[in-house]
Length: 206
Image (cartoon, rainbow, N blue to C red; front, top):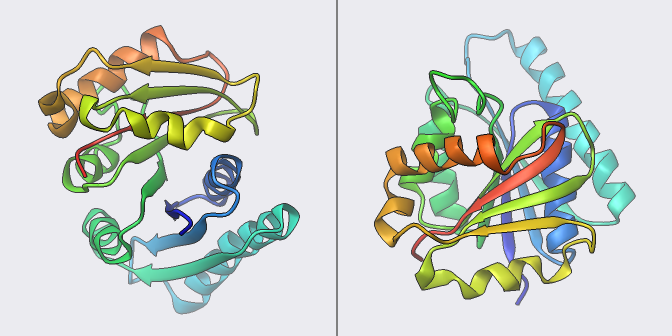
């Protein structure tokens, strides 16, 4: 049975990166892409245009990669709750999402991503977009209880990809949202490239 990967995105470009990443690591995975509108008061015509633009770009990438993706659009007053509920319902093997605000000094994870990480149970890949369209570096926070899944996921990673495995943190540090934020903040200063796209994968207890 193939893996199930859930992609949660806001900006169309991030959706493209997440889709390319999912296909790179798991070409045969069952893919679902979700996009939530944060403001139900947005005029219906404008919301429809924004949604069509987001999904049209992803559909073009899916056609290019020759892969199938199910697209889901919802309006949500609380996007964090919506992502968590949808993740629980879909029950994916991996959740991939973007962190546009990761490099803000006051909120390293932009708030929402950190809360999602603390509430979901599946491994989560946090994608950092710093200007390039190819993935050259992966940083992995490895829970000792699930360390074997690192090699499972990255068995098909590109040969030139740089993979940093960080396993000097106990199980509790990966589950606690504050510690995850602290760890990611440290990683951005020491391991991540100044330019390019990278992914941090947080392994958590099943």
